[in-house]
Length: 144
Image (cartoon, rainbow, N blue to C red; front, side, top):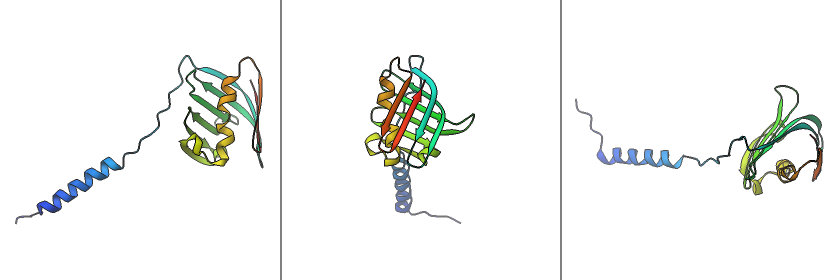
C-alpha cells in the first residue's frame, strides 16, 4: 500500500512551519551582569506608598555605564522587589511590583514609575549615607 502526500500540501506545511519558527522568536533585552568594577551599597530602605509602609534590607549595584540593580528584601529569603535597569529598558518583579514587568522605561506602568525613578539619584550619591526620594505618593528613604 502506497501513501501519497500531495507535494503542494507538503510544501505548504513546511513553509508554515518555517514561518512559525522564525516569527515566534522574541528578542530579549540583555542586561549586563555585575562585574568587579561596579559600585555596591548595602543598607536599609523605608518604603512608604499609598497603602503600604515597609522597612527592609536593600542592595544597590551599578556600573559607570549606567547599568543598575536594586534588590529589596524583608528578612532572609523574602524578596519584595528586584529591579534591573539601564538607560532605556527595565525588568521589575516581586510582590511590590504586583508580578513581573519588562519593557522600555518610558512605557512603565504607573505603579512602577517611583521605583524606576530611583536609578539616577542613587547613582549620583557619593559620600552621603542617607537619600530621601519622593515620587508621586511614594517616599523612599535609604540608609547606607
